[in-house]
Image (tube, rainbow, N blue to C red; front, side, top):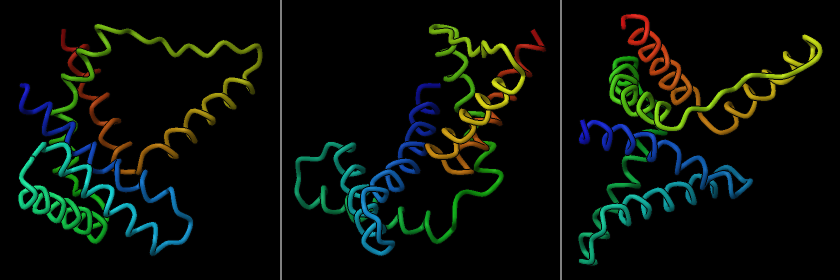
Length: 149
């Protein structure tokens, strides 16, 4: 279970670092380079090697996997489902330990629609389509598990 959480967290981490770092630069090509370099360095730092050659290898590997992610334009459907299945127990456990209620309190239906639209735009700004799909699938797995209980 712990290994599955670590793999799922690692996939989400790698798919979030590159676009976040690339957003620091406006021009497309420099943004790509900055995103790849930062993601590669973050990958190497997360592996905690003190050997410079191994650190360089991890950095190069991180840059190459970042390029593969860009070229493939995300992950396939089976990978999204597998990731959602690995993330669902972690999300369910975290939400049980720290419950959050998102009840919109508005006096008019128009305000509720505006609030939901704002939350939707925020999610689209923070996550790419594949990440949102994985989170949606994980939520469906959690809901199905609660209905079965």
